[in-house]
Image (tube, rainbow, N blue to C red; front, side, top):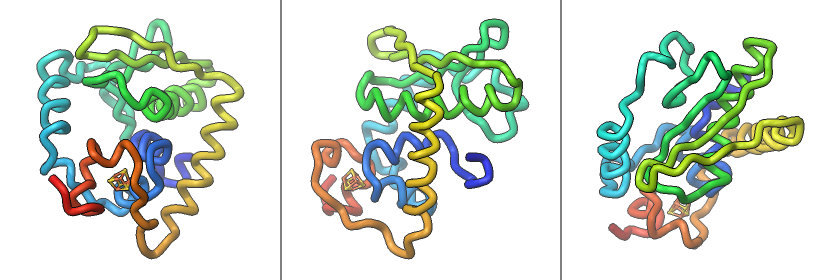
Length: 167
Ligand code: SF4
């Protein structure tokens, strides 16, 4: 996966929308225009600023690492997009598994409700992530972004202005 130059957020976007994944991988960013994203970022900073546990991870950017218990944690403002967020977090756990030769656990913290959610990391996760990585590499090769297709997510997506011209 590292060879493909993919990051955790690519896996999150791929689970939600191929166009969104393409835009993100080609560095098209509309998040600074989005109130929801600004709210999420502020909540994130207030609730749990990134601590020192993730220093020295060479580009990996989970929110927190419990080195003793081999647990990687990604915090999110709200509890939506469970599978997508889970894949982002599993990505970090798998890379740490490869780097250390020992299995890692993963979890999400939902800041708004203070709930914790376990993310499975097992052999099935490895197969799933390889499949998504292959899809991402194919999506990235496309010269232009896949066409926009309406879905429930669009009204909350930071790219909605680009795709649909709506605020
Ligand atoms: S607005 Fe909809 S179609 Fe456009 S990137 Fe977001 S989810 Fe995909």
